[in-house]
Image (cartoon, rainbow, N blue to C red; front, side, top):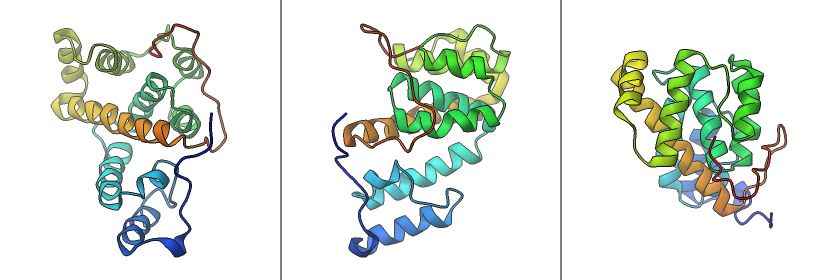
Amino acid sequence: MSADRLPPIPPAQWSAAQRREAEAVIAGPRGALLSPFVPLLRSPELMGHAQRMGEYLRYRSALGQRLSELAILLVARAWSQPVEWAIHAPIAAREGVAPETIAAIGAGRRPPALAADEAVVFDLCDELERDRQVTDATWTAAVRHFGEQGAIDLIGLVGYYGLLAMVMNAARTPSPGGPELPAMPAGSDHRP
């Protein structure tokens, strides 16, 4: 991968709008201006709206942490996004996503042993990423497991983390270190 196209801006060079939005991220549950927000700082208003949406989706969605982290890993794999993977694979493990599940997703495969709620998350994320829609069967299962709010929150997670993946892939944001996202085999479509 080539050099980072949008590296950190020194705080002394931040505009008033950049400072306001950066300080809001730092003061929130993230506690720092992390990778996806470094390139987004170039558009402070967009960054502010994105970080508020992300704060809700990551920390307070109707799905809870385990399923939210599972969805984030599925998006990271679909977009081959190493920063999301490095950050969220350890969090997913800590929240109770099985190591075998994380490994299968990283390898681009459907995990063989998913709990019923995890299977619904997998199916909805996979259909959205692959088909750009959701089947009636998957929608019904999502609403049965999570309610309408949970189904919408899951779609929000896919969209939000897809946005971050696009930003970081375009900016060539370097991974902070941690678990590496395995390369997909040649000819693969990057989806489990």
